[in-house]
Length: 168
Image 1 (cartoon, one colour):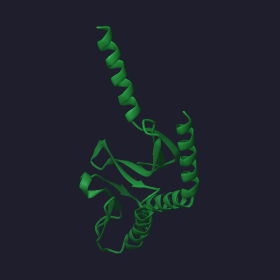
Image 2 (cartoon, helix red, strand yellow; image 1 turned 135 degrees about the vertical axis):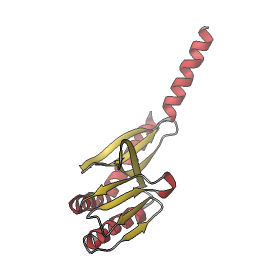
Image 3 (cartoon, one colour; image 1 turned 120 degrees about the vertical axis):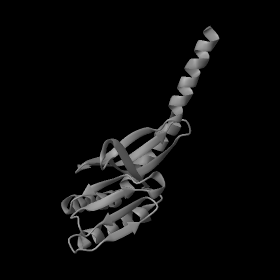
């Protein structure tokens, strides 16, 4: 019995170490979206990941939350593309034309009948989406641009965390 209890405690400890410990380096609430630069620290192997995360309630399913995650350290092209596509969508908005912009990490759609921009999660994850007004889109562009500007600071923070992990 005692052996089973010790074994169970060890399994719980190992599984807890296998889970990343998220740290939010910056957060913002834009409309219904929670935007963050998130560092996931993997204590079991002393490494960490750095992501831009945009979490939103799936339109029509308010209890179903979806997240767009883009690697801030290794995939800056997708973040730049998201910023550029959001800028394009604000120009098209209100011009009575449809537009679809696809990426592996997200999709953006505008429709001539709606004065909204639709931000979709990665098509491989489903069709979860949220609606953005032009003002919310502009706020998201500013926030993402700031995350890109501060990228090197976040990476230095991440490297400092790795040093702390390796000394433990």
